[in-house]
Length: 112
Image 1 (cartoon, rainbow, N blue to C red):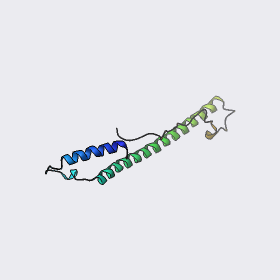
Image 2 (cartoon, one colour):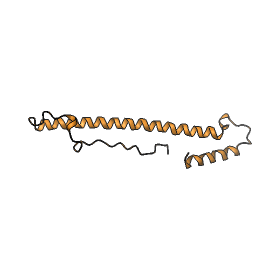
Image 3 (cartoon, rainbow, N blue to C red):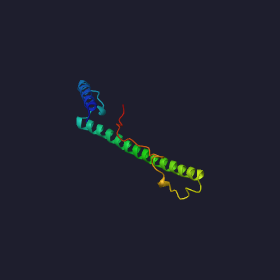
Image 4 (cartoon, rainbow, N blue to C red):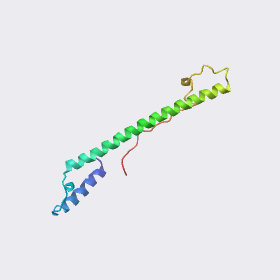
């Protein structure tokens, strides 16, 4: 649990104890630290799942883009020199000419 979560917890419980004398409390005001930490963990898990889905989608898009660019490179090479490059395969295109997009997975995905 990070520093932000601890300060939220302190503020919440200090305001919760200030309202303790109020007899018109709703059910939502009745929770303990374990429930609150569980809610925070649920939020963290939700954003981890979202980050995983986002990364998988971006990696898939990067691979698809690379495949299309390699195919276009191959077709252009064959168009420019039809006799010399008939047998050029898409996988034989050097990655120097058609680089793969690097998908960065080192970022924090939490609400601000």
